[in-house]
Image (cartoon, rainbow, N blue to C red; front, side, top):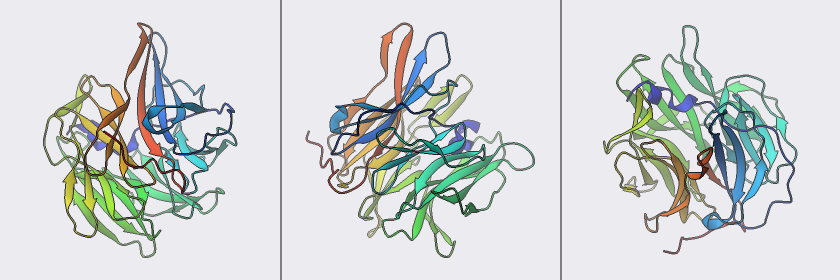
Length: 336
């Protein structure tokens, strides 16, 4: 792994000004980011939702600030009414229909929002890339903007990023990437669990990131690097290791592999409210990113959104899927 992986959890993030749209459609909705790449100008990003299978798309926010930055994550509130997003390294809240956009932080180094189970707190990653410390730690802030507090220590070349809260609300699953030097050929990765009452940590899975609890907590989706199945060229002089999507049975402690690819990176898993299907991001070697879905048992893998080239002057890629939670929004099992 090169330096790009060391900075995996501190990628710059996404969205900007809101455009008011019609009321959000009822039923299951999948939020995602569409990046527009004009040939002769900077890229920009839009936040959209769609129904199961990729149909009935609706714009939530658009006309984003150009800059070419990749998404740093987005999250639904537990009631499915509000999205937390990041733009220019600060956090914003916006309703699912695009209304009520407001800024939550004014820190300049906040990305990767995750809601608490009661919807009153947002966990996020706060990074530092200059001075004696280069790393990222986990912080929390109340949704009214009060109560900013630090949850994990800032350590040199250690990057902590929140992933999901447990259904009981007592624990935060997070990723930790720890590097030896800024130019190290490899970094240690682990999915970990943080007690929200005591602050104690414990290991979930080595060589894995993005631990996402299923709605009932019986499984955790993970992105694992254990298989050593190639590399993804992210820039002319940088690459990331390929990765696969797994699920961990939390009771039995067993891992099940859901994808089998080479020179492909799976990322950003998201459970639908039924716990029967998972949406995830897939990056190929060009690179180009698309959104996939698969049943929790590994069956019926399907492509939802792939790179679109509208002309030699304009193309789109798709990032960061997030299923809208809540009763009545279950997409259920994918039919092959």
